[in-house]
Figure 1 (tube, rainbow, N blue to C red):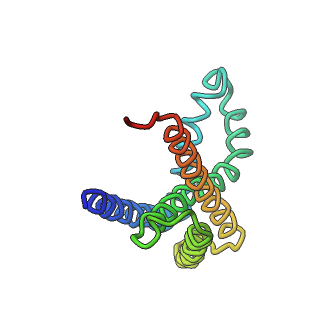
Figure 2 (cartoon, helix red, strand yellow; figure 1 turned 45 degrees about the horizontal axis):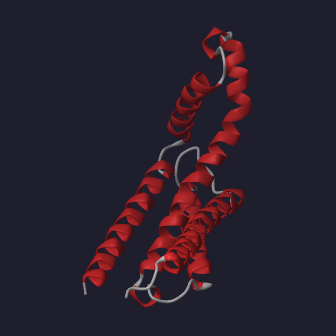
Length: 177
């Protein structure tokens, strides 16, 4: 009985985190092009200052050239990573759902979170079509989907590794007298 309550709480927490993360994605998408570019540009500049040797010693023109070269890639990585987390959360939601919890890992636990991520990515891009300066791009939907599939795969691998470790531990435990 205790495990059911714990699993139910874990499911509720996971669903709440999923919905909150979807709201974060929506809020990022609601920013107009200037706000969005400023936000990603500021973050990119901070990361470059940490990871590029002698960043501060470079001229402003050189810094701007590097920023211009990396900005689009950085933004697409943002799409990828935010949907990787969403895919992982949706996969956990499906895994924790009561009728799935006692069954071995099934294909449903892979395609259902991917489908939900794809639908959310499509709606997110459609939403961006109504935000000043933003666009609706099919390419971004597929970048989002690939991120979600990566998150799903990471969770699936974690479940498989955990399962194998449990089996190994169970084999090593000597029988009780």
